[in-house]
Amino acid sequence: MSAHRFEPKGVIPACLMPFDADMGINELAYRAHLADIVSIAGIAGITINGHAAEVHALTIDEQKRAVVVTKDALQNRVATIVGICTESSLEAGRLAAYAQKEGADGLLVFPPAFMSLGGHMRPEMIFEHLRHITEASDLPIILFQFPLGSQLSYPVETLLELCRKFPTIRAVKDQIGDGNQHERQIRVLHALDKPVNVLTTHSAWLLGSLALGCDGILSGAGSIIADLQVALFNAVQSDDLKTARLINDRIYPTVRAFYDAPLLDMHNRMKEALVLLGRMKEAHVRPPLMKPTPQEIGKIKEMLKLAGLTAETVYKAA
Image (cartoon, rainbow, N blue to C red; front, side, top):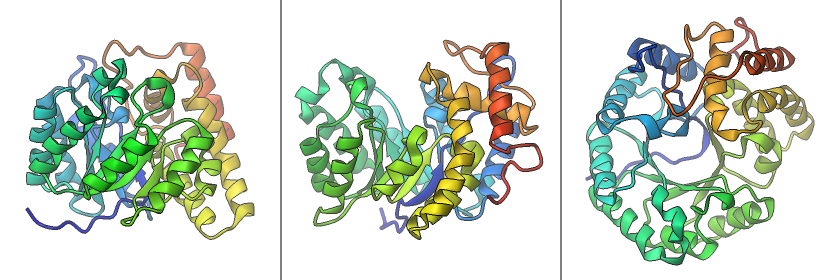
């Protein structure tokens, strides 16, 4: 294994995974989607095999194929970050090793979902999960901090100890959902002897989150509005609040399009948006996810209009 230089910061969109009507992966559409995202100047990488890609519904073989296709499509123009999402620590290690073998630049590590039954009371379990991953790969890790309500988030002290024990954890993707704890995590992670970056995925209140000091954005909405996310991030980094507010005004209608309740439909809605914008021919999701109603698709269309997103402006400089 060798040292890897990728530093997880900046804007890192999480891509979608297109399917055919028969629920197979549409590889041509996937390559086209990756090409659209990578065309945005200023992004630092693209995350695959995450929530946006419906990783819960992908087989292990499909997840591995996504790594190969992504690396071929991106050709090292930006970093490839591979989601490690599995209930099995043994499988997590194997997926991490495979990602490194195929040239990935980083890993996004999910907590095993079964740990929602009280895993925070047995922190040794997540330490063991990370041990299997870090013994199989020395790629930089982005640790996914889930929302408080999921029962999968790590208590702050556990989060800090994970970062101390596993030095390849170079960033935390923070979706804690609580502004108070979000700010605390940013401060304590930055204060570590070896500071750890914070990538916000609070896409419903992105400006406020970034203003607290986040080092970047890792969000499924970046599959459509990466240009706006780059512009917002740069404005905040430059302390240009006036510009940041103007960009946020454009982003806000997309929040209503994608992130209204129920939240589990967010990536379904993004696929429908890309159909409306002429960037995908079809918007299929694997069950148990279901296609949005015609009324909701109509709402998405209206919100895209309010955001100034059209077939001519999507994926263009903000």
